[in-house]
Image 1 (tube, helix red, strand yellow):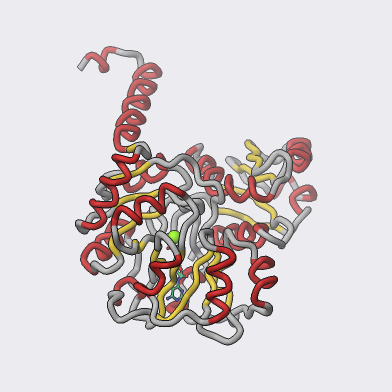
Image 2 (spheres, rainbow, N blue to C red):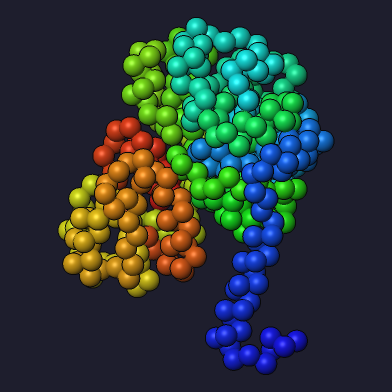
Length: 354
Ligand code: AMP
Ligand code: MG
């Protein structure tokens, strides 16, 4: 092959470009024709990666147990971890759930479409593989117009977990999906980078005081304003109550060391190993870390310190650090309010390697 005659630097650039080109070939833009094709692929039992405002999802017909089983196989996801069922609008809710508690109705009316998953009693027709055998189901109506169109064109409800290998960082671009699951999915629709960037907030609505199963893209403060008090589960939960609560999750390959707010500025340089990078919340923090000269690289989540932007960048930054080959990542907790809770939750889980 002609490529063998090139010197090694040029050869690696050419190979890199070819691989990149191959991945881009896998992506389909979000033209109406492609969205219709994606919808009918789902209706035929195929699995399709779809953009949502939170992260990219891997979707299948929620009423087709075999199609859903292919999602678990593609992701290597344990079957005790239930999937979220996505609907095109609140009017489709009754096809999936048996009963909508009054507080759930209030949240649906005020906050859907959006990054909020509500766990409610499931209808018999939802296969056990979707809910991991639970008699409840998590349902969400995404706000991303591409996701909603695909679901609408599929004519069904779509069970979709994040489109990443189980336990690894969730994908926030179509390219992330192509790189990791490109050979295992039937189709990938590119809807651009996700604007929220962390998974949905999950609330169990089957209790009088609803229970927060996972902080996420919908701030808990907004939910409390609408329905009052929320409960937080006991520390030692059984895994099957909600596997989004598995401690190690959303984890990069690098070891992530998580510190309290402000602690990184005081770190002893001698304690920092080689090939270490740090995540800075904003530009002033990045500047302080640069002055300390402890780290080979500093990634900034949001130069202006905007929590929304930081959440949207979090997973992509962890991936970039992994791809750059850093073995240790240092991070600090951010202020624990609004989306900051979701960011702290994901940083915490990323720091817990099982
Ligand atoms: P993922 O699809 O990876 O964003 O994860 C979905 C998460 O939603 C699961 O890991 C659970 O934490 C939660 N979930 C979905 N359905 C239920 C349910 N019926 N009961 C409790 N938690 C659920
Ligand atoms: Mg996931």
